[in-house]
Amino acid sequence: MSGFPHPVLWLWAFSVVVQLFVLALLFLKGNFRKLPYFTGYVALNICQAGFLLFVYVHSWSNPATPGTLAWTSECITLVVQALATTEILEITLRPYQGIWGLGWRALTVTSGIVVLLVALAARGHWVAARWFELDRGYHLTFAAALIACLLLVRYYSIPVPSAYKMLLGGFCFFSCTEIIVNTLLQAYFQRDFFLHAAAWQLVSMSSFVVALFVWAAALWKPLPVENRQAASSSDAEYQRLSPQINEDLRRLNEKLLRLWKLEARPQ
Amino acid sequence: MNFTLILLMSFAVLILFLLVWALRDPRKRSRSDGDLDSNQGFGQRHVSYFPQVRQALAAEDFAFLSSRGSRELTRRMRKERRKIALAYLSCLREDFLKLWRLARVIAAMSPQVGVAQEIARLRLGLAFSLRYEMIRIQFFFGFAPLPELGSLSDLVSRLSIRLETAMQNLGERAALASRLASSLDDGHGLDTP
Image 1 (cartoon, rainbow over the protein chains, first blue to last red):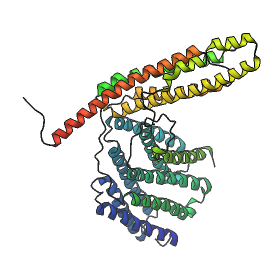
Image 2 (cartoon, chains in turn brown, green):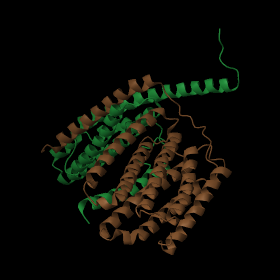
Image 3 (spheres, rainbow over the protein chains, first blue to last red):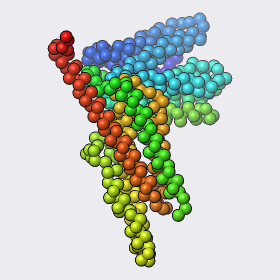
Image 4 (spheres, chains in turn brown, orange):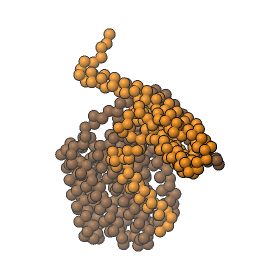
């Protein structure tokens, strides 16, 4: 623990205080009932801080053990982070069953593609720091899947309460900064990365504190009550109308193309 | 910094930009983006003005002026016609966007959404936008044939009538469902034999 510079220790302590504040807000405003996984995620982060304190204070016979334990705890937290995000997306898209179904598929396809790209990009590189590669790969997949869902929401003009937007935005911002920080440090301090581990901790924790503030602002008021109900049509209506509309739009495009071709003809 | 790292950085920055764009308040979007809430009702479409536009762009007038040999006037008229055609084309696009958005609303309300249908519509929308821009550029150098512009308007008009009917049906269904739900909430339930 004494190996960390003072600014890192102070920021760590500060982030724990802010996490406790966010957790208190979740309970005081009754939001923990609406967001059980998100509450679990914040609580797990606080537990992780306690666990890391124990890991770094304790003297280990194998010097690699603290690092492995710390990263293993991070893996668990990241899995819960994914669950918390899915929970918020599910709440947002619950009244739109069809779009939620589409969202799930978009999420799976995007994640699959990004995982494949990450695996290809990381192949044979920088074996000593595989944890950083894995961490960046996870955040890359997470951010891509989240943004795919948000773009879907935007495309279908689905109204999202600003509190949920802030929660999702906080997650995405944190993941993006993690990707940028990991990549920059890998690019510039590849050989003596471990000398700059403090800088990585500092920047990484700062972005997490920013996300925590955004979440605190979102949770300041009780989350909106879910009384939104989309005026759902029957499935048959969509099945009947959608191909017809597409056919009309296709014909419209053909007309436009013909118009363009005629226009392009020399007069 | 190698290519992979540059790619990763660019990807992260792109996601941040997309995040800001995706979370932006939809009300701040451009009004010209096929806004369904615009003051112009759905029944009053630009395509309905096609007869007036056709009259203004009549080839007979142009032939008459050419036969009279008034070059300056012909040139001015050509310029004016181009302006009218451009304005009309832009209005057609506005109508198209309104209808396109309406189709998305129908999809959003459906309990099941077909991926192939949605991708096809997205592709059609993108193709329309691309062709529209190309035609607009072409208009600066020449003049679009009137019959083609007319059939384009007819198509938009037919599409809008069909969607209008569909929306009306959906509205009626939604109202019925709402009435049914409120009567159940009141504890009256449904009359059973």
